[in-house]
Length: 156
Image (cartoon, rainbow, N blue to C red):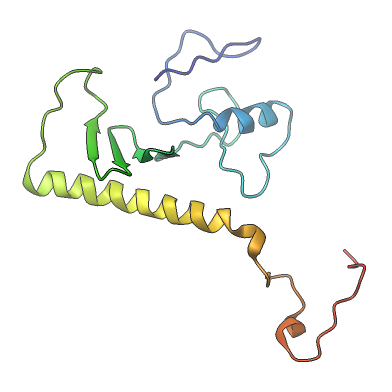
């Protein structure tokens, strides 16, 4: 699905290929303001806008109540909670027949995309539980020892 960006000083009449996410608009606006996206942000500045450090995504992950998907420049793998799995060749027009991969080629595409999908699902689950972390890397090493007393208020 195309994303159109226009504005004063932006290069016009160009098509930039690649994978982008709506979350990338966040980093793009911050970069135009001279700021970084922030630690842990799942956002990179949109490519081709003349911003320093243009980065491109290798893939995009998405989730809804119905399932999860991952897409790269060529393929989209979706796994739905009802057990249905679909694999689309994005080079084909919407609604066009999807030429089937067979044998080794299909297994390789599925293996690669499924590995990305599982990694993103696990990353999302871990991030969703971040508020439950008791011990952090910057915490006093004596935290878990008997008799530990935390200083209140925290001198941070």
